[in-house]
Amino acid sequence: MALNVTLLEPYYGGSHRRWVDGYRQHTAHSITYLTLPAQAWKWRMQGGAVSLARLFQERNPQPDVILASDMMNLATFQALTRTQTAGIPYALYFHENQLTYPQNSRQQHGWRYGFINYVSALSADLVLFNSQYHRDVFFDALPNMLKHFYDYNELATIKVIQERSQVLPLGMNLRYLDAFRTTKRPGSPPLILWNHRWEEDKNPRGFLQLLRQLADRDIEFEVAILGERVRHTTPEFEQTRALLGERVVQFGYADDFSDYARWLWHADYVVSTAHQEFFGGAIAEAIYCGCIPLLPKRLNYPNLIPIAAYDACLYRTDADLLPLVLRHLHDDVQVDVAALRDDIATFDWGQMAPRYDNTLMRLAQDAHR
Image (cartoon, rainbow, N blue to C red; front, top):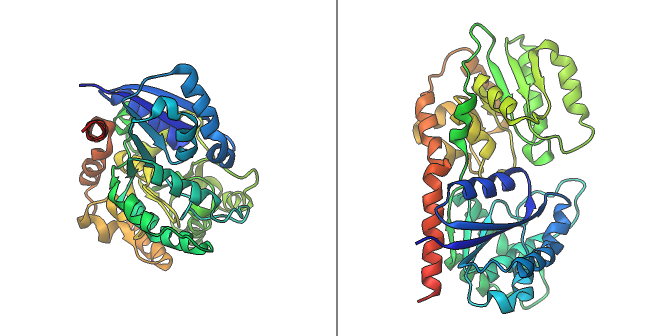
């Protein structure tokens, strides 16, 4: 039996948009999605629920289940639609959370948005996290936030949310990348890929330091620097580009997905130096396209590769990255790239959509018992 699902996404852009569109394309359920443009994330978390409640009332979609992303103030939405949605179960999907998301030098908002995540989770019938790592850090941080307040900390609510929560990995359109498959360039130097946002939580300085260290050793390599540029000025990237010269074969965000995908297929290695990553979608895409991942042994990265590949692909400390890269560039490491690809392919929507469908079906059935 197919369900009528209403999907609420206040920040319809980037990875959130790919998630919405991917699930819609692969689900056996009927999806009505209500979205807002991916702008002004703080206002979307505070006020998006008001606008989406209005859209819900205007369209009156009659859902069996409501699925919302973590950018949603779910409690506000429920209050504003209570006459239409009473008795309808809610699932809340955490792509990220603001309790543990690093606040960069421009952000000083304290617990405000983390509290929205908390009351949204408390309002949901089912709380879904995109990785076990994500679930763990959320519940590790929640007591610290609640204890921060003066009194009536309501610590007992943590167990309530825990009992309603489970892990449902990110679904991805990995098979779509096959359409852009191309061969590695014969005879060219090893190509190192960076496909993360140019933002502090991804630690681009660590990656750029690696490139300078390789250049200082006169190591032969090329680099493709992709990812969305969040800041208007990125002097450290520009300086490194000037230093590396012709080694830089791609510099800047690839607006066309086909161009992005072809760079993934061309590349030999994908590197992360991130301090924050709740799942690792960009790394998963690169692994699927045959890149050997060189990743810190932290965050969710160990869950993206088989244990047998840990020694070849994971480094423990920042100081261990350069030796690991040099081992690879000197052909001292063997990696079963096909095994990495097969393992990461389990996150493709072809396999994940039925899991999502079954999860929402059980939620709907439990609500009617």
